[in-house]
Image (tube, rainbow over all chains, first blue to last red):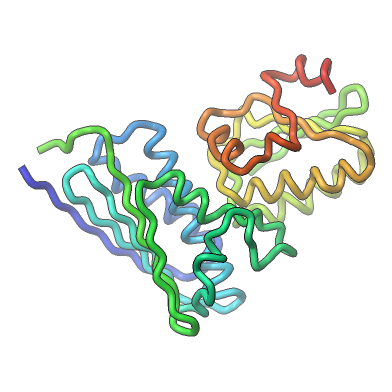
Length: 145
Length: 111
């Protein structure tokens, strides 16, 4: 039987909302009967994507981050979008250890973490318009009725 | 996030209690550097037993402290690493520069 669910959330690009966002996604994912490891994986990936939107997308300016989650059977799709400055060179941004902000002691591992902890990661970005990160995780459990 | 400190045998032991993300990283960095400056021990040991969440911001925090301590000839060790946090450390290559031990006794003996 097909199972679907959807949720959408908007919040200010404040760093306080990083923990809020990952807890929301973890709660929403609970219906997929996840393992502790799966929950930890999605919390970490969401934290990376939202942190990127806040520090790279909006830098010091205030903006809105949109978080959308869709469940389709045993798959969770997470979309993190900002209307910030965008990424000029996506392959470079996704390289392990690349960071545009070494002065902030950023490790440059954000995208590598997302790619390792999720099954699929897609990045769409337009300079001056914003960035959206789409991530998909397949849960091992079967979906309840 | 709470930090607890203890000095044993010229080693500063820092215990994290809470979640380490970008939001808290800046304050943690400042607090750690003040404490490192004040205690002036040769080595650092991070106890992660009660670290409930960490993303790549935490890697930046530990690497930054490693850079400072290693300039002075010191070493950094991490102990009691939870499984989910071990995954992100392995991925980041942090274990090439930071030593991992099971517990405090082992770290104190080996450092």
